[in-house]
Length: 170
Image (cartoon, rainbow, N blue to C red; front, side, top):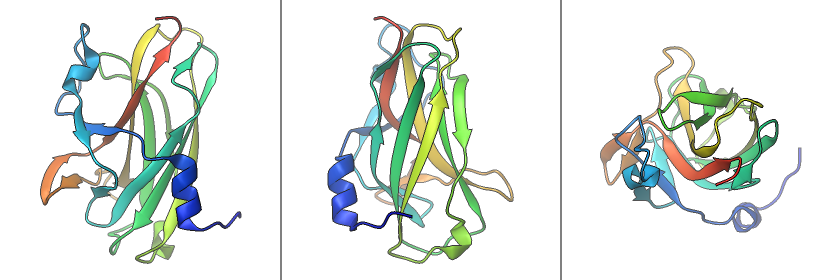
């Protein structure tokens, strides 16, 4: 395990844009019109914050891999064991690639802990070209319920959208 100060991790990952959306299907004409901006850190379930991320590419070809690295900070007690999901969605909101895994069991977490998770999404050779939506979040293993995204005490959704990824040519 590689250890480094949280400030170093944050500077390496940057403070990219993140979003939420009330829709599951994205409009064909302007898919990002459904995106509502969020500010990092983003609180999930009053227990964890997404504080940073890195995506290996903004454009990928079919049969390539896309790496998504997320940085999380524990801010409160965790209710049950959780798993992180990272999904690549098409315009209809259908999952075209996914990894659901968390390498650090949540029963070990304490407030102030910082966690880094890497997910490698495989883009299938038959993936439709165009803009695809990248979503991340956490869910409890016991009931498969996603932790809510909370902004100023209000639940916005149950996922965080990262900037979209272009598959194939424009």
